[in-house]
Image 1 (cartoon, rainbow, N blue to C red):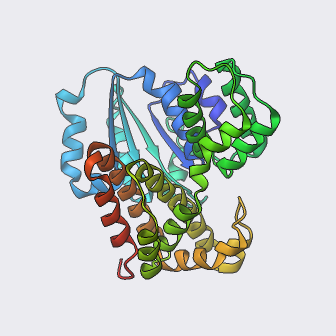
Image 2: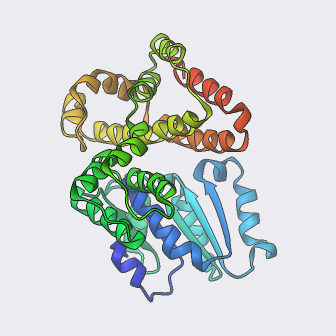
Length: 328
């Protein structure tokens, strides 16, 4: 069945298998955090690639008695048409005590996985599409209203512009602001500029764009010219994540229309003219599958950085240098 997100949170259907697809990663995270995670004590997360590395182990874990405790939620990330047969098998087993959510990127209407979830009455497919600035403004205003912190429209517009049309970026900016305001009763636009300007750091954006374009010499030059700190490593790796997800959308669009210039011209939010050549290089250098793998790796690198703060810069440098190699 096809559900809208607002239908999903209201549903009384006893359905335990869901497909979340589309570009709005921030909205997917909100639904999981606010609607699903509070209901389940045990949450198990897999990447599709991990499952196919050892498919027997995956089935054994699901079907074993130790897995049959109450309140179980299985999240399968980067799901594609490859996993359709496994979903068919699990569906027939009628695992009432297990809830499964597949998280996918863009799935076109011909997708076998999407068609399965949309046509079956005991499966739910939910599309997560791009937010407009009005929606993002409403979210930002609601945040400050709950915090009982007065905010000007000018400040709201600044925060929304920083988000570049992405809810996940907006939530990151609001998280920074939440840490800053703590018990404060107000925040100025100058303070918002100060808090959020790191996400627009030109050197960081230039570093990430050249790395993804596989301009290794330029990447090394930028690294040598900047003295990045431990605090910067999280911002840099999250910038990699944001730009890699943008690259994923661009690659999907290019696959559909086969026209590189048209792909870049029609992309929303618009790509700055000075970045267009770099973005073209990125699309040429990264296939869809390689980009999915890159996003997986970035998520793992962020975890490594957080676990090994003393070695975080070296971890990040190794990742950047390996990613910028032309033989990747």
